[in-house]
Image (tube, rainbow, N blue to C red; front, side, top):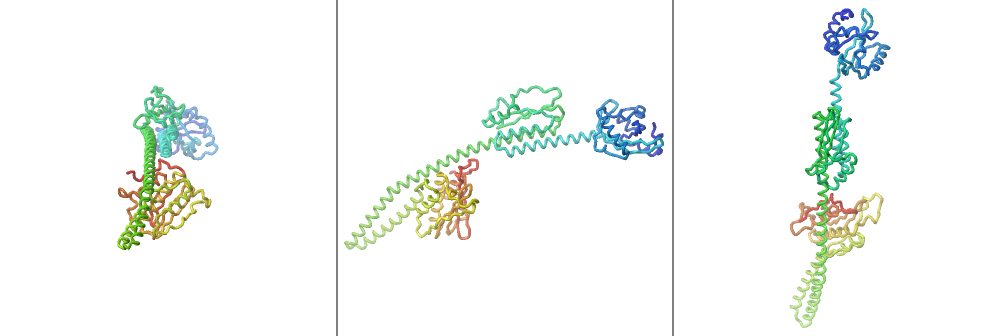
Length: 510
């Protein structure tokens, strides 16, 4: 039926005929009474076949029930509606193809009765764009999950377990298989991680895809070799999309980099462990040499000088008896020089002699302080700070394992030696500050302090500060020099448990 026969307004007919979107009118019997040229083109029916036909001809069979519910709802309340009330609608062309639509229904009263003017919009492109956006967002979310796993993983097994799962999440209809490269040389850690993948890991045989499958094969590298391949299959065209392919390739590259990072970390830890072990052996050798020298000095040089001092004193007494005052004065000068040399040797023995580590650390500290060649230096009592212990005072927290007691004693003796030799101090004090994880010690004095570059490595042959830094680091702790008003502090902290090789950095090795 021509629109002019249905509508009273020729202007309305002209508007509908010239509209770029399809418009049809439907009467109460669901019969199409009018179709504009755009509707004829959209549905593919000649106008004479379209007008006068029931509207169900334009609806896919599987959506008829949905349309009937919508029609009944509109009949109960015949008001203008748009966007189909939030319901996804589909239309069918003459050739049987379907397309997604949105409709706007407007009731109109004509000379022949009430009709509904239905405006139709093909939203296929919009739905495809939304689907593509969702797919790309899903792929990027999968990549973010893999990157998070790569950032958090602490071993190869955890990385592969969580990283490979991310490939499953790229597309809901994708099938992912992890296949191992048979010719790859795998480290024990990586091999164990692959074995943990179980049924997902099969020998790679490059089997052909099904006819409709799209396939992406993504190599995962380790140390430049292909360790495994992630094979992603999808029956849709999603893998043909360059953006999705780029996301998959980036995920494979990121997983490869993360595996390399863990491998490098393990290698560095092994090298650092070996380095620390060598450094510890060097310190042990130095301590053993110090002990040998101290024994030799004590048993030979000190005893010989003590005997010589007695003989000079006896000679001076004899000279005074025979009336030789000039020679007597010379003997006293020799005695004075011998006293000076003996004091120097006693200071050397303080540095060289080992401290027993079979007793508690507090006793070790007391032993070290008792051996300080004081002169005019006042050695104050040990002070203990319990503020870092939430459960209050606990004497057990003041101790360290025997191997750490020895290193603590050596650092303490080196610090006290520096005070005696260089600080020009009037007093020195040792402070202890236990905490739940370790023990901090500090040597405080009122001396002249240290130059601003004293924290730098010592000059060749004078490695006092650097040696203390290295010893603390070897034990998994730290050492620092600080100046607070008129006091200088050398502080060091040692853990009660063994050091973590991955966290140790030796200050200098030369």
